[in-house]
Length: 356
Length: 277
Image (tube, rainbow over all chains, first blue to last red; front, side, top):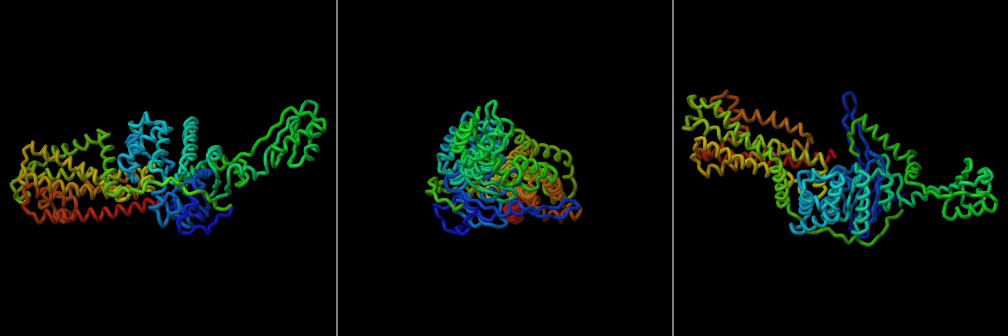
């Protein structure tokens, strides 16, 4: 991908991307332990990103890939070592105050005060952001209702369930109607039911408010379902970016599987299938014929017609779309689950000194 | 790919801003709510000065008979001790002020504040203000109990007001110190260090329980530079009816200057915290 670095100028242009990042680099000087030399840890290594206003951008990658570091820089918490980042048209280094007014930030850890009630957390966040007392109270009521936690509004957050508390985290990030919302692993640690509820909520936010959302996740299905565009991040770099469908389409189309009727053998069917236009990588396995097709929906009927004409009976046929996991594998050389296990193992032996 | 162009974002945030002092008030209220919701915390904070008052009042009651104690002033030991216990309570409480920062950093609360238009000064002031208020409430209880115990203070209400001023300044000083340590270390354990290694020696290198004029010369010399002793000197002289007004104002001034310096150091500790992110 080629990010238009030349467009990173200082004027505020409303049609400009809501998030624009070029060549972002972050190094930490990690302290060497006893008998170990001090070394530099490179959390980000020239990352590029663009998010259009009103879109949902998903940062997908294993732990330690640099997702949280990116979000912390964009939220003005951490300073980049090199590179440029603009959020809602404001440079995060030169004008952090303007960025802070434009964003909502939901960290990976809970962002609410457990010794305050849900309502108190929301009202305080609203007032710190400049809402008047009355506005903050009505906005808090609105969000408590919308996230389905109004029944617990006046209970201390420490008594809330994990799923409810995470919803409150997101609500706190929304109190001041930000232009850009950062959600750092919003569903990590939630049970499947709470995750489904959170997904529905994020989809509603994305559809309704014209807000730009940057979401980090290490769940493929989450990125696939919620993100308009996905950036796969690995070892501090953006490996590939695009819509989930475009990324999958790049993998030369769909998987085609045909199960042949009794009496037919796949070996006989292979030459027939190879002659069908758009069908490639044909393999036979017993009575099952496998192939790939650039556009499965048009290739499959043609293949079935060709088999019928050759007198080969078909019992079942199907198409399978490539998954984001196939995309991840193709671009990083390993599956996301494998990368995740490697990252967890490294964190276990070295101590999690780099929050990434 | 090229940067997509899409219609302007229509969700403008509110353009009103909350001033830093107003933010400090909101955050102080949050601290007060947290404190009141842990009744053990409040009870301990009121019980501890009573223990000091009783324990030291009994243990050292005869030091008053040493010739030359307190410059030969006509005071009971309880009257001598009361301002000392007031300040011990204020300093001992404020030394833990960084706990709120540690808890907020352990969760994502601190990061959320720092990624919002919340002023760092307001975060710090709120902690200082809450411990100043708590220290003043404790001081009133201690002075009241001492009065019931027979102590009499010629300084009257004016003396009490000046004592509260010194309590507020001393609380702010140690709350800022504790906050700075919390931001730099991000560990509750480090605050134990502040509380045990710093405040306890400071208590005894002062005139809080004993007249330094009767102690080895070096203790009196150290006490002169001990901000805790400055607060004790102010409070004692104010309660005794402003025998030496010059010393009261001088030491209040010194305390205020120390608060300004420590506040500035604690503010810069926020930068150190951000660098560690």
